[in-house]
Length: 455
Image 1 (cartoon, rainbow, N blue to C red):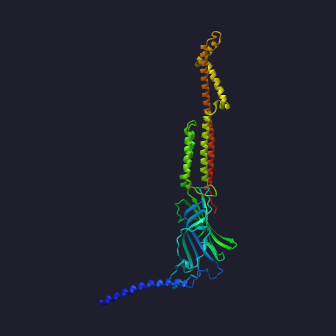
Image 2: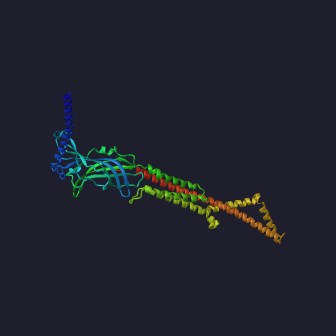
Image 3: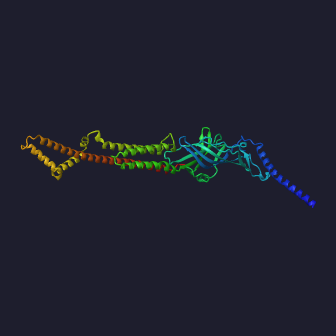
């Protein structure tokens, strides 16, 4: 029993020693491989054995999110996953000699890296620093890195909020010409253009496509290879339609409905003034939601300006109508009415009818009697009776005053009718202008929203 126990202890110790030695052997192989690769490696030399052969760098791009679109400064902030791959002919080994190790990670600052930059890059973004790259036994190096890119872009905000933007990210080498460093696209053009697998599609912007192309830029300093990715994005307008356009349209509809208030009532001016003040406050509060640009005025800015101009025109039209209604307070009504042919013809016609009716109707029998009395008093029967003459003059004065009041009331009614017709004509002209403006604006927005950005 004692011998068996001692044998078991020795076997256990041997197994533990073997378990410790195996990873040490593998770790020593990885360390030995890394040391052999970098011991005589010079990262300042382009990694080719034949200097006349260009280093081919393959580039790939995944769009992760659109973070900000700054129309005033013409900048686009995006989050992308950038991949590049090239072959280093000095970093190759036989995996069978190093325990089957086929791929290792090396420090990025210890090897040669192509000097590829983005031409539209304007400022540093918040990108994580990944210090390692993967190297395969054949010398293929894969460098993956997420980037937050702040790039310059010619943003067109005229059709806001129905705008579509096309911003480019151009990758090229700073120093190496196409004879030393050439670029190519990792995946196919169609696959890159339609790939939206990692894009955050629940934001303000919708990714339409990412077309790409390869070209050689010829300059005085040489020819440089470059790969351009175009980010075609479209704004989702629902938030701005509900928050900006719909309230503006409703205020315009309320302003149109105010025309149904009687023009001779004092509430129309107060109502329209309240709408104008409310629209001004709304416009000031929504100023931060609109894109600010110094090159051109967005279409929605024109929309706000024209809406306010129409409200002011509507208020001015109501002021003119009410001024005509109360013009008799400043000038004699009869003078103005007499200058209107329509009202003059109506006045003469109605006056003649009233005269005939007064001479034939039973309601004017008293007036006829008074006229008869006047004739009697003027006859030789009662030549000198001062009391009767005074009575006759008083009755004649009352009759003239009543007829004048009837005439003034008729003229006032005709003038009111004329002002109502003037209000109706001006309202129709206003509606025609408003309809033409609405149709023009709708067509412009529809044309811009359905516009396909060239790629």
